[in-house]
Image (cartoon, rainbow, N blue to C red; front, side, top):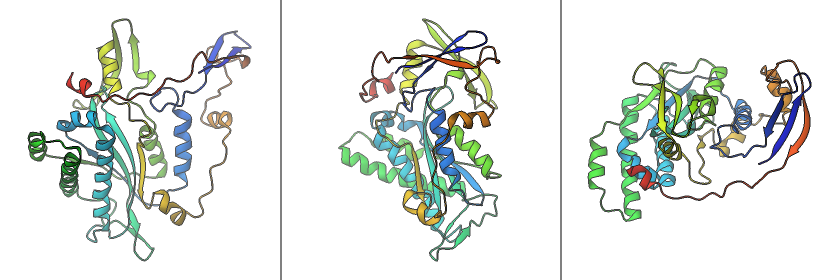
Length: 337
């Protein structure tokens, strides 16, 4: 994609800065987009507790998700929102229009295939009279997770059967029996302490990819080694080594369909509502990113080698080719292997 060459005026070290490819699966090109997204979200905070819910599909549906990713991922997010919205309008818990921000994830720490959606939900909503109502959990919980799990399961299976009929899929009886017998669990974390904590937490999920460069510790012609967290053993950090073929296979499982929106906002956090709910929110101005990163303790003009000199522009590097052409092939063979 081309870039620029800089030389330190103290140690003479050469540094290359390449232009962003702007691909959402790139491990290097997401920091600026992430900060822009967070700045926009700062204008839409409500002074209340925020809750974190996670809706997960059972692994029996993994092969189907790989064969029909756009449809199944959309169905996952749709059913998660329908579940939250139904409980929001229930006067036993709230009785108002609730909101939610959702982020789709498809991976585990070891690059395994694990479709789930993270939901950040304000602990209240807007009543039919236009007044704010606080959820009745007294800041301890939002909605009961067992009831959430049951409704989510019923909604998803009902709409999944409709999808089977639309696609003309007949050999799904065993799959339906397996997922009906499965216990579906909606995970709920305690409420966040404040908006600053929420911002920091959102930053981990909004523009992440399956693996970033800092987790890769070694690679050669045969294998790749990287850090991962073992969630079944107290989140211990361990090292996993995979053959190059297996590493690329696992990574490719998490490439989303072209144009698929993995970050969505519902209820009073959606674009339809936000002008009414947040009429005084200022528009995001152009940001001087040199000053922005300096405020976070990173001087982008300082030499990262000697830590003393200043980087001086020397030359522009022309791109040697355009971005790769996107092609989509169903990943049935990957799921089978």
